[in-house]
Amino acid sequence: MTDLASPNASALDARDGLSDVTRGPSRLTGALSRVGMAGIELPLLLDDTAFDVRVDAGVSLDDEHARGIHMSRLYLGLDALTRRPLTLARLDETLAGFLESHDGLSDTAYLDLTGTPLLRRPALISDHSGWKGYPLTLRTRRSPRGFEAQLELDIGYSSTCPCSAALARQLIQRHFDERFGDASGLTPEAVRNWLGSEDGIIATPHSQRSRAHLRLRLDPGHARLPWQDVIERSEVALGTALQTAVKRVDEQAFALANGQNLMFCEDAARRLHDTLTTQPGVTGFRLDITHMESLHAHDAVATAQWHWPGSL
Image (cartoon, rainbow, N blue to C red):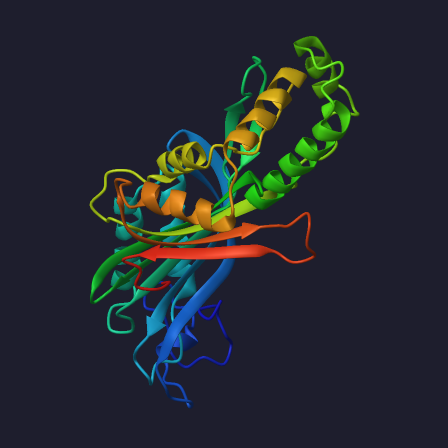
């Protein structure tokens, strides 16, 4: 930290008589856009969900002659965040405290939180459930323009390729013609048995684990962080959220959900775009879709945005 004591310091802190070299002038001049700390570990509470985060905290150094900032003041200002559930209002208060403790040095303060809160997710049919993590980053800034906040979320889901599904159906039709083309033995029972045999459905469409990376501009006046609401609505829109603990009945239901929600990456992007434009507490976004192909050695990607000013 730049405010640790130095035996060669000429400036003294009036409170304790210990030297503080940050109070002296710098031989090198120039304003700096951001100075602070990265990777601070804190336990925080989002709604009723506790999780560990890594925090990056900093301020601008606008006095081009100042030696440095007071990093310990930033660190101490973070401790209050661990005592109550996190809200945008409390983050704004923390940033205002950063600036107050650096009056005359800084006009902009930054606070970024990164972690993976866990939510307990029920199985589709059975009474099983399990924990699933949702990587999250919350970026906040207070500047002369006011308070700004952006939320980043990763949401995993399964996607089944519509083109692959159509090609598989075509192969099954061709195979059916070969088996029953002369209509011999064509009874409902025979067809049913054929459909349930390994010799019947000879082709299946390919599906892959997929990811939606959401960057959301938040309304500072919204009472609570909408992270869980965004997750819930996004998973409903996609229809094939990744599962945790499952039984065979759940796996079968998941296969049905994939078959009824065939998706190109473009389809997933449009579904989420329609959902997020009506999400309370969100005033803009950029979403990046990645389908990690099981057919190709590369990924299929799509991007959509709405009222997006760029990242903080």
